[in-house]
Picture (spheres, rainbow, N blue to C red):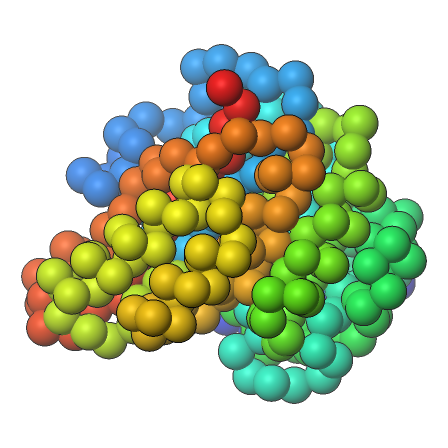
Length: 282
């Protein structure tokens, strides 16, 4: 059994177990967070699809906490699929993992080999390549939140994407939807939005993009992305989640929280946008 060691503990989040738990709870209780700790006040009996940011907890953690408060409404998910961008361009274009445990300061979480292989077979584009995951933070930073709300017995499937074009997003999203259909699973798309622009400019661009996310319109999503030059790092992950949601019968998305790093640092001159989104059925 391979163990994927934490690559960004002590950088993006605390490396000490007690400090990490305190940091996560502080994110939930932060003025930009949901203001309460999990679990959610209601319980879902079906899969849920979400978007969460992936910067350091001191910056995007309070926004991510909105995502995970909603995730906690699925009390015992059968599995969790996390789709995140490949920031480093290392390894395969679309990569999962198997026969592996991922380690954080909160312990180890086992990869769901059966689901990972099913997604790979259905999609025809997902490889198994541990090199892609070695340094990547976009999936890793979601795990402590997941461990906090579900414990370490839950299984998950990491999918690291270097290819983020619309065709890849559709193929991957359809495969994930087919693989989890009929189960009670959680899908998390890991992405930040506009990078290093003034707060007001970033907010205008990001809200325009989130409007088409709300409509589950993948073609329009890529249109806005290119027209406004929205520098979202995990746009392919968001598009894949939109495809998953639509195929599973979700009718729209709802923005749970949007904020920028400037609202944390008080420096509004150059910020990064952070989204928390859930997909809903009317």
